[in-house]
Length: 132
Image (cartoon, rainbow, N blue to C red):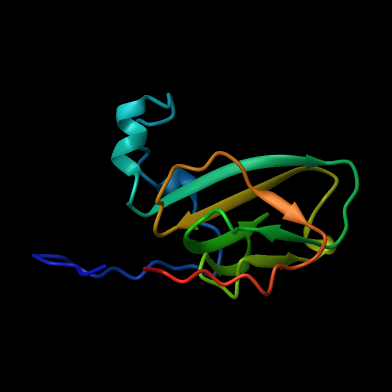
């Protein structure tokens, strides 16, 4: 996407998960349609939790997402991009814990607001999408 006009490039540290306590919170937590629409097509941070009864190695499947970076329990898991080949990312079982785990996703494209993330037992390595 071509960027025009006056703009400034700012480096974002991605060696660890962003600290949500230091980020000015937008008023979109009520999921008002206008607030959600205003974030479509703009970089956003998603944050959520999930509970596990057991831990083990897994892959997070980002086929339905755009392009970004994932953090699990504060650790940078890696980058994904819907055109591939990084559509699934490996999560070592030792980085997961029984009980509550945290996921933070920095989504750069945000073509549509997301509400879920899926996992899979095997990586997706052969599906490439050609952008038009």
